[in-house]
Image (cartoon, rainbow, N blue to C red; front, side, top):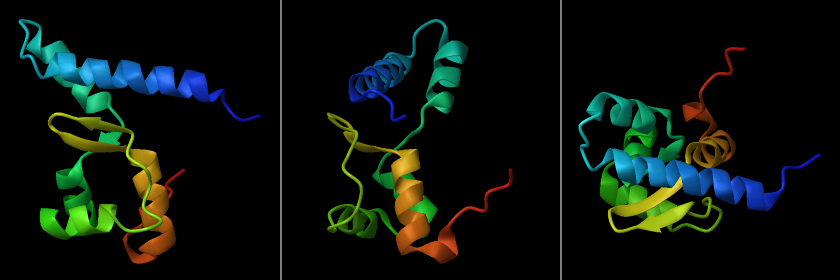
Length: 102
């Protein structure tokens, strides 16, 4: 049974808020860093590293038809859900797909 889209949007909103809070460099910086590490989102720079291309090329790829829709547009840039990007890589760049090590 598919998850309720409202629930998924709420989860994403909470993760984005946690990321924004973490960027404030609060006194609990260790906690904030662990929150960022647990986020399942990628920006253009992370996509570029994942694909082995420069950030300019990553932006071009992200604008291509068929690339996943962004999860959010923030003042610091666009972010995508990692799972969506990995699914796209598996379909369109299978030589770069991560092996499922279950």
